Length: 358
Ligand code: NAD
Ligand code: ZN
Image 1 (cartoon, rainbow, N blue to C red):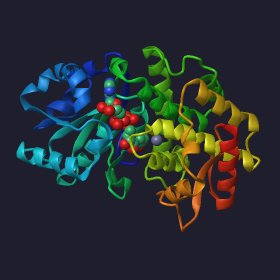
Image 2 (image 1 turned 90 degrees about the vertical axis):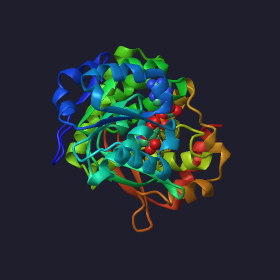
Image 3 (image 1 turned 45 degrees about the vertical axis):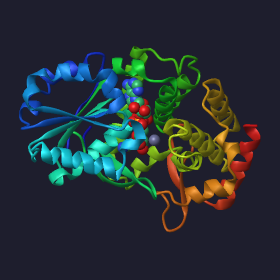
Image 4 (image 1 turned 180 degrees about the vertical axis):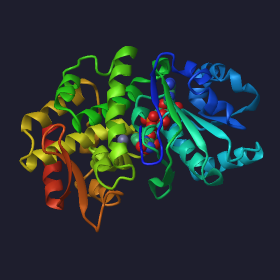
């Protein structure tokens, strides 16, 4: 990944943590102190394998566990981590390793971005979804008023995926992460998208297939981030499926539906909008609905809430500008663009979708 001021590698494979004692030895040894901040559930299953690979810096390593999943993205956990680092004598020369899914990565990234105005950190992501979240330097915590409302851009020094860790992921988390993979395909490449849509073992993937596919997703994200680190233009494309998706996630109550499950519904909705505008074929919307059903992505939330309920959440979206709703739509697969959409168009898409998913 190359941005204006940073360059870092994203490593993915079965024995990636072995690189700590070779490629990343200098990064580790140059730090005066190192903390692993780990999702407690992930730590319980996998911490020993990460710790073993950090034997060369054992004497300066401390471990802090944080609540599992989304619960860690709070002001309380944020403050707790900062106090921990201060009490442990961390300085601007220290290093943090985030060990967990996207939630842990977002929190730890924000801790690193703000501890003494910014220190280095490494992502060791443990979910499929994190192929999206660990790349690109967006960090954040949630506020009672909304998700990801306080954060910073802060790029990691390295990202290391050890693919064997995916083996303990519940099927719901696999489904969630793969929805973001499909998003990367939809905004970049028609042939790849079609390959994914006809893959019968999509939600039952092998480790090898995951490595190869996540690498493609990471490359899409990396090239967009390189072009537009601070989301002034093309980085917005990564929000495909997220305007309606976030509304679904919020309406259901955070944690009830996984992020990727919500994004799947959001992508179907965006295709429905693209179709209404005469940009994409009806068959494409239908194909994605069928795919979602086949792979057991829940679509019932579309029927559980009224249009006005979804609309009230969409109006709080960070992508709103000057009171207007902005959507990422497709002119075709691999051809995303950002456009204003009226309330009437949103309503029509919603009505069509409720009929189609009955
Ligand atoms: P998560 O971090 O909440 O993890 C999901 C669940 O899986 C948790 O209960 C966790 O304990 C568990 N888990 C993690 N790894 C595991 C493993 N290997 N085995 C068993 N269980 C494991 O969820 P996520 O989907 O990875 O990330 C979602 C978060 O990422 C959201 O907060 C979202 O806002 C954020 N996100 C950020 C960006 C970004 O650019 N920064 C992009 C997309 C998403
Ligand atoms: Zn997302």
